[in-house]
Image 1 (cartoon, rainbow, N blue to C red):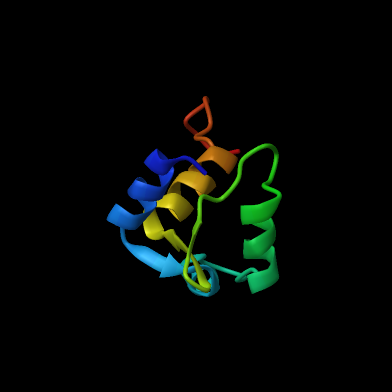
Image 2: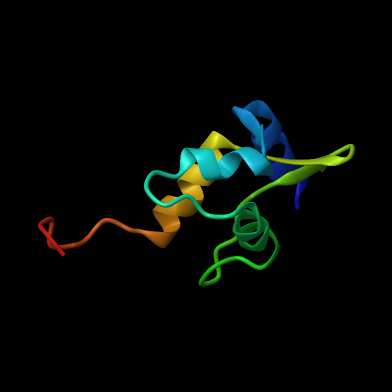
Length: 80
């Protein structure tokens, strides 16, 4: 991860990866799913996170960016 991404994550609302499932509405993903989003990505998009000591953290804003990339707004503007 570049220093720019590191600074961005650390300047936002930092949370440990283990807290990400509680941010997702509906059926919450398992913590191992969150790790997979960070390490492998989904459809070419990876969840931004950084290691700080023994912890891996992301930010609320990074989770939002990740979910927006995976679920772009529909072009029709109506129901899917």
